[in-house]
Length: 439
Image (cartoon, rainbow, N blue to C red; front, side, top):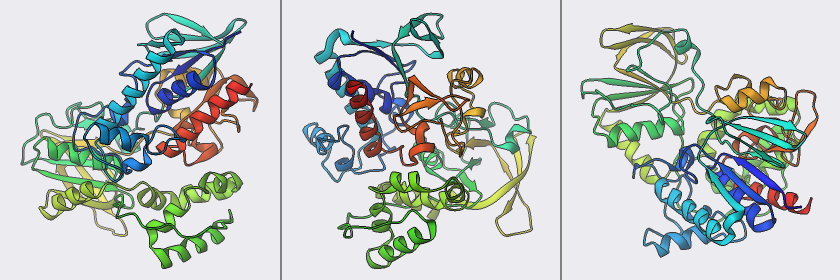
């Protein structure tokens, strides 16, 4: 009997999972998404200033057709293999792939414009409850909900700030409203989200001051011209040996080559590492890994450098010690890293750029909350996502795998670590579809 598979979420992971299932199985697929399918947060931006962080040559949706996106981009007259394309253009590419699948597979694909708020196992299958009050039954459910909304920093949670002062999510809040060029905006975080927020402010005409603040003040590094990769690597999973190997490659070919050389090995190294080693990596090395591994387009780096030279953007390392509401915004006290003195700054707006929440036990997501409370899913041991087994089956509170409730995408990083970029996600979605087809 043909299976009915419900996919919750139609960002990159959900869209590709649907396409692969249609191509590799005979299943009926229902794709549930409250927003625009095939876009997700990353590719729903309307800003031409938001570029992909990877060249077009590395952004094909299909692992067996590596030039697919670059060829599509060229056919649209929008660039070639070395282009850092606009994210909204990549969203159009994904929409085109989904449209082709709908045309090819017809009634096997249903798209439901709604939000899933619960999944309950029953005698007839997995019952998916929707926010509208409707429901559906599926033989198998795959969670493809992508990154969760940002967590609230502790200092903010302990402070009452007006809605026009604090923006909890730069993708959902009006960060430009009522700003003047005499104002100061504080970005909490200096990673990729802060980069996007700074670009939104700049593109929106804001010419005041922006301060991006994080504990280490690390800004994502820029891509440079591609260089030939080093020869075959023989990497050990032990942290000290791995660090020596990476330093050796960096000395010979540069740090970018060293980081890129790890890409084919990262998931294996993570799987082989002990829990203690994983936690040590997350505690000490993750911030450095993030800014060197997840780099930005050279054009974006140049824009940020120009803003800094003009005195409109500052990047700082430090910690917020106090926040108080004022008549014109908020008074922020922060201590620079390694210093004793406290700086005071009046800001018109504070934007949370700390990045997505990863601890599902603290997530403010109706579906995740329901599944955690019911014990159907649990956090992984490092609390950076959903606990899953080698087949992407979610693990319940008792440690048993849910055969008919899977998870794919960034929330499986506890098992895989590197599972946020297109090259990894396209492999995961295809492998999942193949396992279902062979099962």
